[in-house]
Image (cartoon, rainbow, N blue to C red; front, side, top):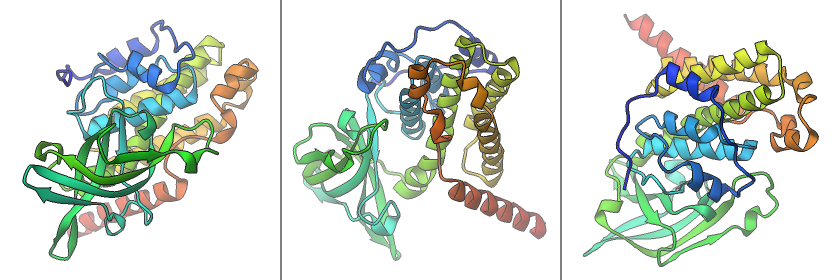
Length: 319
């Protein structure tokens, strides 16, 4: 059962949460971390409050990024059960574009049958509920896609994590095989899967993942007496991420705000060098300071930024 929608998190609420005392994750595995801190945390259309309430307990960068991943799914699917660990399964051999999604959803007398395969199912080995993209046919020359809710353990669903055995310090990944998986009609979401879910997911996840890591790094910095200016910069970034979460996160003006946010995050992260010296080696390794910031590749961000400005410029010219 889903949690009731709470009152929106205010900037004051967020600041109070960030600077309160919290017990961090005690070395649990990812699923234990999510099921310990996730259920009962505030939820809602933005899912930002839930993200913040989970991320403050993260003891490493992986837990923080998974908190962001789960919050991004809940933003797009606010009806997700409160206690569920979830996965978003779209990509196939030809990637996540509609033309490359060959999984099919076929009507039956009692619902639908789902057939196909998926690549790169992040967190699927730990998930209770998987959101799977499939085609219901074509209309006007365009493939019609729907997201399907599939319970872990469903007959006909198999997961293969072996192609990703070499990935370390990453959320668990598996490929999916779906053979005549029976799904009920109410498990098929009516919205256009590409427009409403697939297209926005990567950017939403990037923002939420960045904020989650910022929350963890802020708390790490406070614990190890980092310079006050650095802690202030991290706090400001988190509050900017909160402001972004209050937008649709899809319009050109939203993308411009996100572009500034990511550039500021890159600058702050790049300037943390001396700060890491104050963190014990083992704890420093858990936050992987040498791997750069999380998120969509710089080239993809730059393309989004240029497209946003082009659209705004075109609109301005037409006035």
